[in-house]
Amino acid sequence: MANEVRLRFPPSPTGYLHIGGARTAILNWLYARKHNGKLILRIEDTDAERSSEASIQGIIDGLNWLGIDWDEGPYFQTDFTADHQAAAQKLLDSGKAYKCFCTKEDLESKREAALAAKDEVRYDGTCSKLTPAEIAQKETAGIPSVVRFKVPDRPGAVGYNDLVLGRIEQQYSEISDFVIVRSNGKPLYLLCNVVDDIRDRISHVVRGQDHKDNTNRQILLYEALGAPIPFFAHMPLTLDTNKAKISKRSHGEIVAVQWYRDNGFLPWAMVNFLCLLGWSAGDDREIFSKEELLAAFTLERINKSNAIFNYKKDDPKFITDPKLLNINGHYLRTMDLGELAVLVKKELEAAGIWQAAYEAERKEWFLTTLDMTRERFYTLKDFVTQGRAWFTDDFEMCPNALKKNILKHPELKEWLPELADRMDALAVFSAEETEKVARDFAEGKDIKPGIPINGSRAVLTGQIKGPSMFEVFAHLGKETVVRRLREAGKWFAE
Ligand code: GLU
Image (cartoon, rainbow, N blue to C red; front, side, top):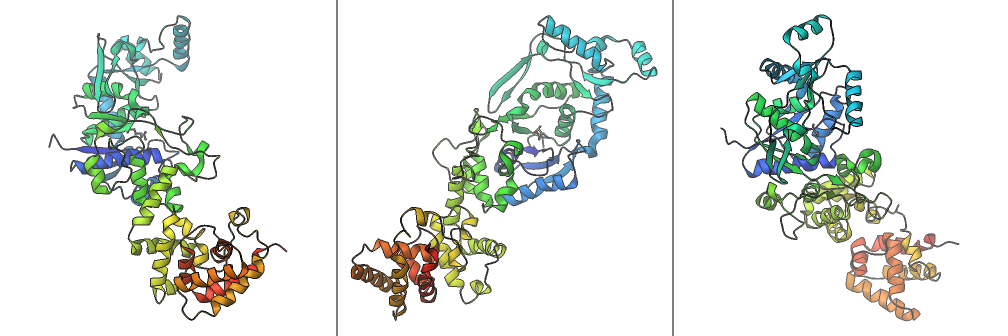
């Protein structure tokens, strides 16, 4: 099975799935699915302090919510320490690595000397020249040592053809003999990651550009361990509009996939958006079904330049990247109404305004309400914020209703209850009939129809925009319309 396509997602647990990590997982997943390959979830849990069960679960929950499934794992790096140590021993035995007894102070003074001489700061290879007798003597004396990989001492460069970035090379002479096992015996990331990729027969390593500089050293490890070298593809970093890395510390919860789950986003909208962070189909398309993505996706179309997550922390208008809001809004508007109803039910329950009737005698009414209102909504939360008045009398007036002159006619305080009486007298409470009443009413008062109509919208829905007002009258129903118009006075300051 030499040509089997096998990819991996190997996060270091942090307690949550970072959107950059999610993007990495998604692109690996797409490639694996497109090529009938396998995706392996591997938790790099060697940092004991950060790798609690809860922090691992945070990653798994995020992937599950997104619908990113994997074929093997989760494997845990700490379960394979013996493999990592065996690989280090193999390198030592074959003379491709050596024990280094230099102390921190030794290394520091070498570093300073190199800096002073304007030389490159690289380990000078002192310990690579130790004889077996010298090594034995130091070990008997109990001097601690690390294991360093011996970079081949030859002219030329190590390199690889990055599927995104093209040829990447580094002169052997520029690479310092690097540490692969700490003095406490703990193998380090560069080695563990390669050993795991070899064991898992990974064919494609698709990861962030922050690992680009590790790759040449890792290729040296593959060569030294006699293993085939996978393809590499490095994806652009995800930066904010100021070109800074997005992190929980500086950007808050919105960097975590879980935040989107808890704030009314749809998993597929998130997958669709994250794919576009650093990848494009080569045309203007922004909406992709799973099938369309699978058809369009290639590693070669991953962008070389930084991906910008367009989030301005200080702009309260957008809770997250507006492109994500638009994509989420698109899916809200086009998804199956029955499926939407299940999701909105959860929101209404959480807000304490769910009624069992919405699944019984008022089911049709409920579905129509969702269909009427979703045209303007971007997240599921909008159903319980902007859409709240459809489900309860206990709603707030949007501040714009006052600002935009809508409730600024003091006469409306009397007019709207009068309009309520006219509405109450209607035998057929339809969009046509309520429109007639509203227009007649305006004519009788010699005012623009917009004044009572917009005023009604505000006191009936708490909003200044929404579906056709006559549809709103008809669908809210006579009882609610009449009651809320009669109580219009409560929205006007004394
Ligand atoms: N644990 C590493 C990370 O989360 C994995 C890097 C890799 O894909 O090799 O960045």
